[in-house]
Length: 313
Image (cartoon, rainbow, N blue to C red; front, side):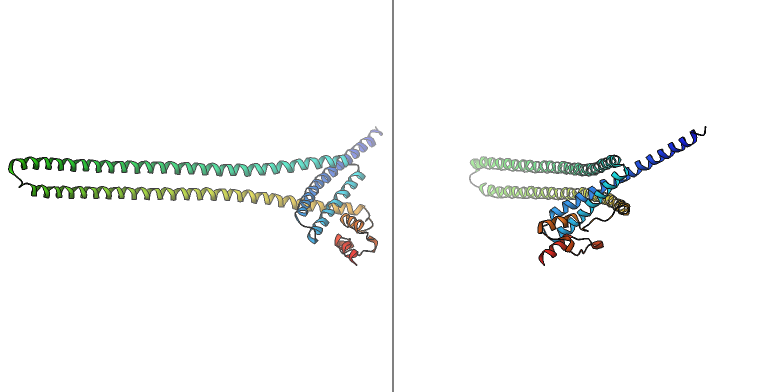
């Protein structure tokens, strides 16, 4: 019984130590994956800029992330949790990719809904325009039919009148010719009046059709404007959510990176020379002795700009 007590205590201590190592390794892996993501974004920004001070400054930031990742790798190796850190880092990267894919899918769905609404509005406008055109054609056909009927009646009256006068002229001489002229003039006046009425009705029908077409066009424009506004609002909301999520992720990553840097800095000695990797590479290219360069960065760190200034002296 006396031997089981210490063995059980040792097992509990061993289990607690393993749990602490797993937690430490997973935490380091999540922080490392976020640091890698931010470093890659900074590298993309650096590629978009021409060579100069701005690119050098961004390269300094990239070097800081590289140093942080190297420190985390060394700390994980010293603690014996390198495998757990790499596994957690891979899982975090996969989660970030899934989040990005979900945001892209939401944006595509919103765009598809907006496009579908626009198509529905356009279809309704087309149907209304077709109805107006059909009504206008029917009205024009009715006016044309009335004009044809009126012209036929007038022609029949003229023919009847001329026939009656011709018959009377053969029996009674040329007296009725003056009456023929008067009646022909009356009939011509009636034809002109009827034609004027038909023209006025046709103009009224055309005006009504124009007004209806204008109303339909206005409704279509209002509907299209509403659909466009909805699409813009949806896109704005999606962009705002994406920015908010990115800001939260960036803030968490910076806080975690700061904590990891403090933990790593407490157990490691500062390397000599105190210069970034970019500054060391630039010094090798220009043949500059870093021991003779005064650093202007944080805690006297030598930057690329310091190396370039030293090479110009």
